[in-house]
Every structure is written in structure tokens, then in C-alpha cells.
Amino acid sequence: MKGDIIPNGEFLYKYVKPETFPDDQTEIPFGIFQDESLSCDWAAIQKNPERSFHIAEGKNLIVRISVCDEIKFPCNPEQPRHKQPAWEQKIEHDPIAKGEDQSHPDIANPSHSLINGKKKNHITKAIARNSVIYKKVVPGQNDPIEEVGNHDGETTNQAPPNFLPGLIIAFVLIAIIIAFIFILS
Amino acid sequence: MSQNRNTPFSVECTIPGIQQQSSGASIFSLQQSPDAYIAQDRLNRANAFAAFINSRNQYLSRLSFLGNNWMSGSSKQPTDRSISLSRDLLNNLGYWYAYKGSESFVYPKVIMSPTPSGGIAMEIELFPDMRAFVTIFDEKIDYEVETKGNYVEFQADKDNISKQLLALYNSNGTKNQSDRTIFPEIIE
Image (cartoon, rainbow over all chains, first blue to last red; front, side, top):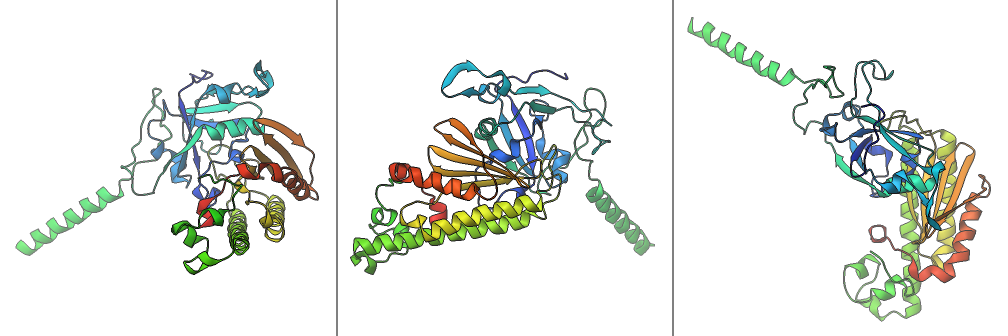
């Protein structure tokens, strides 16, 4: 539900074009997390990040963030027990219905979530520390992509199904049958 | 992999093995004097860092063609000015290391990426307990130094960021050299 706080221990996904990073760089850089409203997909709802529409747009490197207090409640190392409200990050569920995202008006994203808050370097670094490269999706090497409806019956952010291989096979079979009948007659 | 920085890398690796070969030594060079080893080690490190700087310059050139929407959520094409200033900083670091830093320092680790707003971010690990965080967006430079978890922000601009960074490196190098991390994947 919109505004729900995502608890610790949950995972969030971000999708990045592989060419964003140097080829031989294995660390996750702090710079990609600088957005004050950092957009993510909540893994509890986005069960198949490999099928997200972002993958089809070339953002096939999936970064997984672990939700934890280090991100939510950053503290000053010299005063670890002293809370810093100005640095707090609100990690909340922010589902997107069809038509709400102007760049993708036909797509709903029920898993969409936000990490809201001012992103000082120690916060972006904390996010980077709690992130891993989850998967690099190789186009064409995944299960067939299926269209899935969410609880509202809307189309989710899954990419459209690919019927082309099935159509080609059916067409070839029909052609063979017709040719066989023609030869027999 | 961490190495003890009190001892030069090549001196530690005088036992025959892959590391020795990768640092340019051979069975014949085992008879070299310690001075020759140290000189060879400096040269190897200088060459390795030069190759690293070169690869990151190529990466920055490629970022000119990254386009918008490179990440889920808002993400803009890095601006030409941000890329150009990042290249300047990187080259200054490479130049300093090749002509002076390689005498006494292990080269810094640099982690890079674009930022969602169209800038370039660099995390420069000078020592294991000291990192510089530099974010360049057009003419604006944010410069912060983290030491053992404490972050301190400094004023910097395009004309003095390299000098500030290198002064920081120099001022802490003598007391922290033994703690620094080496980067075997680049050394090789």
C-alpha cells in the first residue's frame, strides 16, 4: 500500500545499463545513489526483476539493496547514539498505476518504492555498502517473458509476451502439411 | 588482497611465483640489488597506474554517449563539462603519481560513476582509512574527505581540487603508508 514503510531485511532493485560503470570496476559506486527520491522496485512484490521493462531498455544490470538501519538512520560516528533526523531516509512503498509515469504511461509498477531523504556522501556510501550486483541479465537467455496482472487487474511492469517463435513454428508446420497434401494429390 | 606497505611490493615477492613474474622480475633479476628492485617496482607501479588512468579516460569518453535513462528512476546524460573536469582531475592524479608519487606511494584506488543529475562522482581511496569523495557537476565541485567514518566537507573548485587532493595524500602518506591497500588486479 502506498506509503507503507519497507522493513529492514527487505530487498530493493535498481536497474543500470552495464556501460554506466568501467568494465573492470567491481565495486558499486556511491554516485548512482545521489537522487533525493531514489526510485527502486521492492523485491517482495517484484518477484521477477529479470522481466522488468527496464531490462528491455538495456538496463540489464540489477543492483540489489538490503534495507537496514545503516541506510535509514545514519549517525555521526563520533556520536553513534545521537540520532540525526536531518539525515534519516524514509524507505516507502510507492506503487505506480497506469498513466502515472509520464515516460511509461502504459505501464503500472506495483513494486515501485522510494528511498526519500537528502543524500549526503556518507548516506550514499552506506547504500553502496549494503548493495550488491545481483544479476546481469543476458538478453535472450531468460525464460519467455509473460504479461502478469496485479491485484487491480492492471498490466504490471512486465515486458510484453513474445509470440513470434510460436507463430513461425506454426506457419512452417502448416506449410509442410499443405505441401504434403499437394504432393499426395 | 592487502599487502604490508612498510615493505616495497617487489621486495616482498622475491620468491619465484606469479607475482614476481607479473612485477617484471625473472630468475636472473633475483641477483639485482635492493635499489634496483625498488626502482623496478616504482616503474611497474607507475606503468600500472598509467594504464589505469588510460582505461578510465576511455571510460569517460564513452560516457559522452551514455544518454539519458541509464538507470531506473531519473538519470541524465553526464554533461560534457563534468566529463572534461573529471578527466582533468584524473590526469593530474596520474601525472603526479608517474612523476613523483610512485617514489613513495602506492597508487590510489578510484571508483567512478555518473550521477543521476548529470555529473561524475569519484571515490578516491588514498588510504584504507581515508577516502575522498568528489562529485563534479559542470563547474560545481563537492569535495568531502572521510577518515575512519568521519566526513569533513571542504571548499574546492576546478582550479584547486587536484592540489587539495594531492596535498592531503602527501600530508598523510608518511605516517600511513604501511596501511594502504594494493590492487593486484591492476598490478598484474
